[in-house]
Image 1: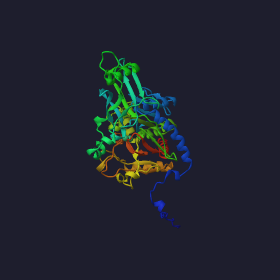
Image 2: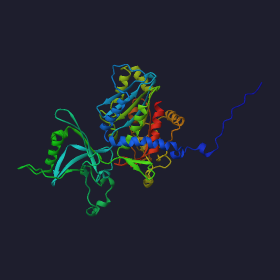
Image 3: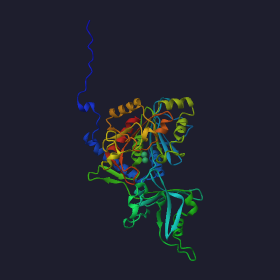
Length: 468
Ligand code: MN
Ligand code: MN
């Protein structure tokens, strides 16, 4: 009898075969740079038109409608290929393309967030001090406060007027419109102990006061308070009074546009790229989805920057409710759907910054131009405040990325250095397999965040591969 030849395992003996060492994306192909340039031109335009969560949701709903998405109706029996959107109070939105497979076989979820750190006006913001009209503010999200002073700011948001009609406000865009500003003390007068202040103390939250105007109120026999000249201007422009400012969502955001950075134009600087770089990739991938096996659930959520609390954040039941409605309130179908659903939590990751190298662990941090980052967990010291992707699910995602030739790396925070959470844990708490993937970013949460065009484009490719 012939003896069966035993299969011999091929032993890997080359360094590059044994080691996981992501390369600079530009070294992988030259075609990809052209594609990335084309993609990011449109992305820059999106950034400049979507500075707040409401503007982003409006943009997403408009473009989705153009692509044939219809408002979700829980009474309709959707069929494969149908495209729907579920708007949550104009501050979050979910887009879906119904898949060929039944919902009990699970969905493919991508969650990114549309809110970014900013300076909100207080509920009763306007006051005057020493002939200046000023706004009191309360910042939103985690900021280094000194980044937000002495830069041009634009006022974005809505005012719910007395007739309950919503007035949209944008002051400070386009670039020749008037702007706002938070002042700082000149260096000449900022001596004494002031120079030794920690960054958290350079300016206090209650000192983030914004100049709104400086001309006196000109009516006869009236108080010449600057506050009233501003109220008069607001009344003329929007037909509102001070009470209407209480019924308003008004935020100050950087008044400048996104631009290329570097002589080679390889990077993009702009406000709100956390997390618009993932929002745009997720949106473009969702719009292009067709003949998909599993139903897509592209979630664009509000409130991530303050911990996802509130009725438009992912700590609420909004995703659960949507899945329940898709499952026609059939609890068995819902439970199976959740059991079999998988999710990418798409959010930016801190990129290694050589100037601040001490804050990173070089073996486990993200590098610009090295592709999308996989983070199995985020959170702080002792892996607190985070979910963690299981080994098996991590392998599944890694295989998808490898199969589709997507440049990827891994990233986790330096132990005990700090670190924030993402929406991943809220989705994981529903019982869904989740992993964080994201684009490396410099100067995160500053008014001018920086990403690489190649990484931004890679994110589109990664999400598209996931949704297929
Ligand atoms: Mn984020
Ligand atoms: Mn953030």
